Image 1 (cartoon, rainbow, N blue to C red):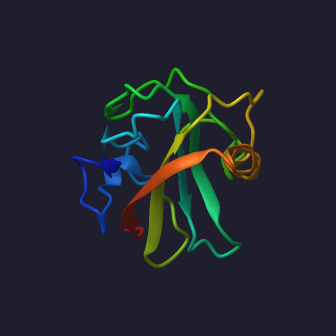
Image 2: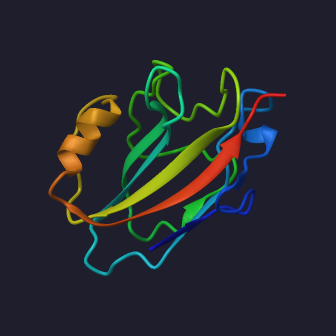
Length: 145
């Protein structure tokens, strides 16, 4: 499985448009080579460099396997979980200091998840635990102006 963005390369700098210093919209993402036996996809975006531990910026699940990507700022029609900002939906990079890494993690699952409401990352990870067929990461970096 491959996850890329036309906005930044793997390990490259995330443009400010997709951060709290810009429009704070989600970046475009492309998904390809999804395993044939997958039933759904899930996405987690987090920042492991946050001072208080991993900070979750975006959680989406039950993404159809024929979804080839997300356009910039796309309205998401799939279930979304609660971020560390305390809300659902995308919350862009906004590091307090220094350069942080942001991991966009895409998971191919062998089931559609039966989760209700805006669950947190930990609940999603628990539900996915024995159902991940393949996963891939796209990493972007950002530091405040």
